[in-house]
Image (cartoon, rainbow, N blue to C red; front, side, top):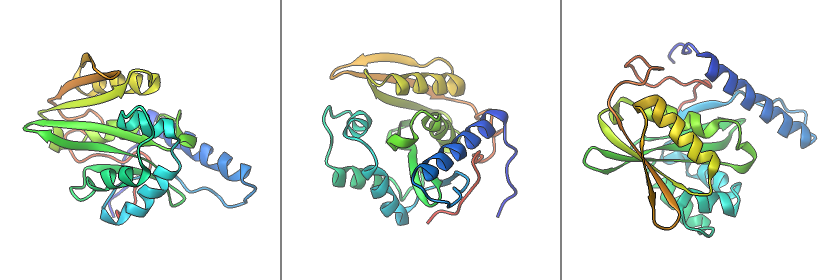
Length: 212
């Protein structure tokens, strides 16, 4: 087990916000169980059950926005699509008290080209979780020097702001294109190590867990 990473103030703030959110949810459910600290960890093939639970907690609108379908995609197909990318270890998840509340990462989409996407359960949206997942995914050195693309539905204002902000932070102002079917594309070249990791392996701002 590695030593805990040094946490920058924004990460500490987000971690504490998520912990308070978890505590409020448990109190509203009239339980006295103390919510655990949020933990960011890589997802593996053994996490398909957690993915299925995450998808079940997403509204039809959330799933439609994530997969750009306009209508809710079949949940079983969503789980299968997400699970297909677990083996390479490119996906990250945030776990709170044993529950997967968000996942995200990048997948190769061509030579020197990767596509990023994030999914956050409805009760956990608005905490900055999607931004942090995208930021940590881009911190992985395997994506340095690659063209990274994020596709977002036009009406998904929160995700549009998050994608632009994180890509600007990591790689400079992204190229923006309006595509057909109500989709916006952000594209940026991730050419240098992310400032939060100093050229080393990605840090884990919430704490760590071993992959399943």
